[in-house]
Image 1 (cartoon, rainbow, N blue to C red):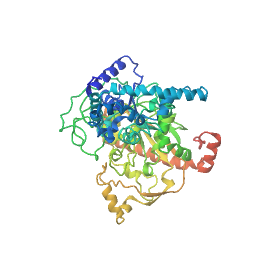
Image 2 (tube, helix red, strand yellow; image 1 turned 180 degrees about the vertical axis):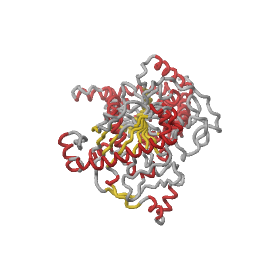
Image 3 (spheres, rainbow, N blue to C red; image 1 turned 120 degrees about the horizontal axis):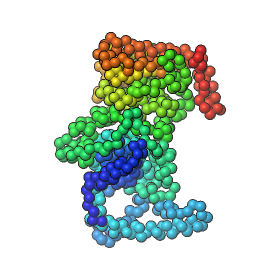
Image 4 (cartoon, one colour; image 1 turned 90 degrees about the vertical axis):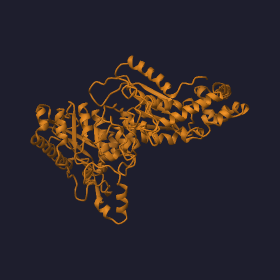
Length: 594
């Protein structure tokens, strides 16, 4: 009752406990933290204080991060000042806001008993709740309530978008859609957009104290969302040292703190959203911090399946039935990923198909069939909060480890021996014009070859077909920009969008579907750079030769797939879907031997 430990003190206590757990845990044992209501605020601050190498996963249950959007933030000075008689009945007045009383009471009911017995137990449980509520006025006297409300206000302010976007942990938000205490359902949407790897489970009919309600099983929710991982696996094969983040001094208020107004997040975390001591400079900047190319935890197959369900990818897979092929150094092509090199680092260079519609199938397929999370080097505009090009997909990209395409990020990923996915043609190749099906628009620079050579990486050319000739481009990006009124609107919408090349036009062409082709992906012959030696980095002619070899392999793979798919008995949608529904497995494809 008289405890007045400040917010940073509470986080420090929890941090010391996590430190103890790390010291006595195996390296591959994941450490979870689950926070409910105010505990959700503490869990996020703790995640920032510990770092993702020690505190791996976070579950938030109706987190009070939305406290400032609730009526309680306005009543902070009113409630503790109520007259004594009114304060004594306060717990009973707000009890319906915590949850459905019947659901809370049924938590103690044995569902295996006969119905009359269950009814008696329910009534008894309701009466048992009364003294619990009555004790709240003793547990939370007015001054203690005032202090708790101050902690809530401070904590909610500290958990800003800068902090959220810097967190590396995988987060599950469980929200009750009938929470009358705080707007938990709306807050779950905000958290999903702000956090890099976040999934949301909304429990219908559940109130604020949903863990106390009957029929709510957190273990079942973990299974449904694929959130439980018995062992932790990282994208990098290099050993990961489980070291806590070093505490940093609190930033002076009003100067270099985070967020608008420079209120200074400070505490035990980074001290700002960028992790480098600088103030946030607006939503046009890339929101992810400077360490976004570090090794991350692999998502579970359950998490992958849930994301695919949420974005409609599972249904789409049933329609396009993607198939993968790989090529040995001796040019033997097989179905599957058998010949994909096991050594690391690996850089996969691929053609962009129209609107990059094949990207989700490629990333999920590598995870499902090969257990590989390829770290995509994506266009920076996809990571901007206010961007007409991300189409709400920033969370999807970051959930699967994508980072903005920069030489620095490629350098760091290859140094960590990761699998990197690069589309040299960039946005120009994805935003095709009429008549440009399967054409490559690679730049003249061989930058990725030089960086790959520095780390002795293996380059794997990857070719994909199926999208370009399944859509018609009605109006190209330039045609839309030249159109009266519409062009002016589009030009204004892309004014603050970041670009990679000077000639980029980040306007989506107007398209219409033509047919639903099957998707094919072929990994070409690996190009080994490990034996070339360090001299390759400075040998421009040799780098150019390797660059052209990779490009020709991609073009050759496209030609191979376009020709061979004509031999696929299930290339057309109707026989393919009928086969897969009856056989309950993926339809076979063409024979690679002839």
